[in-house]
Image (cartoon, rainbow, N blue to C red):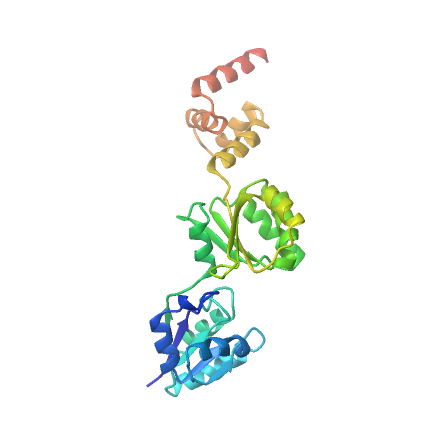
Length: 284
């Protein structure tokens, strides 16, 4: 009978945030696969857990995943832990999960600490819809493309950033997104946890003067529907009324329906569209 893979969330700072179930699984597992064994041994020692560990990280994630799968096929239960938080979120755990599923190994996830959700819920920004992007790409072209996509994002945006890159990232976000609201969460659940709710311009000013320290989660206001509609309206108004009408009529839309859609696009009444078209026709 095959073993299982257990995704065990570990504290992101405060050791009291580990769950009783996670402690039991870590004790009962045959092996713990850890992103950094040197870091994780501190956690295991704190809770007097003696289960053997093996390293599973970005640089061995594929080869080691198949080795771990073989162990599970032979009946071993393996607990996967990351340096902090929930495995599979912005770490190589997602590759192990995929390979386990392809190999018919059962995977189960133990709910627990996650910096993304922790920051989102305390940010004061809308939580119903959000886009998690973790760390922005390092490649310039890929980074520029993603920022252009985020400029149109209407959901709350959640990013991770290291202190030595924070100011540069904030400046880029301000240049592309404009002056949105932002909540910066630092050192979550730790002794020096801080939360700064401001704007992107305010954040740039603050952290230009104050040296950033600790790991950051950035929670950024999404683009409002009103902004998008206003931008669309401005784009339509660059066309003449006749060009705007032709846009729809060329799609085999009736003139009556085209007038209705043009009125909606421009934020005016259908009667105004009709009168202006009539006036333009009479002037020709």
